[in-house]
Length: 193
Image (cartoon, rainbow, N blue to C red; front, side):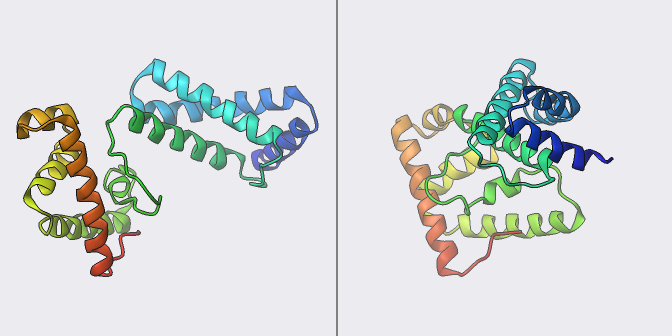
C-alpha cells in the first residue's frame, strides 16, 4: 500500500473520530514539513511556531469538513505551511505588504529560489519588464520602491535616507504599487509565470 493511499485512509479515519490517525499523519510527514519551513525562515523557534500553526490549521480544516484534496494530503499541508511562512514575513515587514488581489504576485515570483531553467528565464524576463515599468513611476515613488524591494530596506531606514516620515514613505510605496498596477494594465503586460 503506498503512502498516498495510506494518507487518504488516515485522513478519513481522523474525520470519523480516530485521533490516532492524525498522530500517524503528523509523525509520517513532520520531518519533511518542518525542514521545508526551517529552510525558509532559518530560525528554530519561528519554524516550530509555524509548524504548530500549520497543524492547527490542518485540524480545523479537517474538523470543519472542508478538506477535499483527495489523496494529496502532503502537498496540501505544504501549501498551508508555505502560506503561513509568507504571513510570517509579511507580519515582520521583511516582505512588501500589498493591498488588493492575490494575483499581483510579481515580487513573490522574483523571490522564489526554487525555479527550474524555464521558470528562471521567465523570472528574468519579468524582472526586466518590471525594472522598465518602475522607470515610469514618479521619482519619489520609484526611489522608495527600489529601496524596499531591491535593497530590502525597512520603512524606517527608507524614511531616514529620504528625509521623510515613515508614513510618507509608506504612502509613497502604496502609490508606487497602485501606479505600477495601472502601468501594467495600460500596457497589457502579463506577469504570471
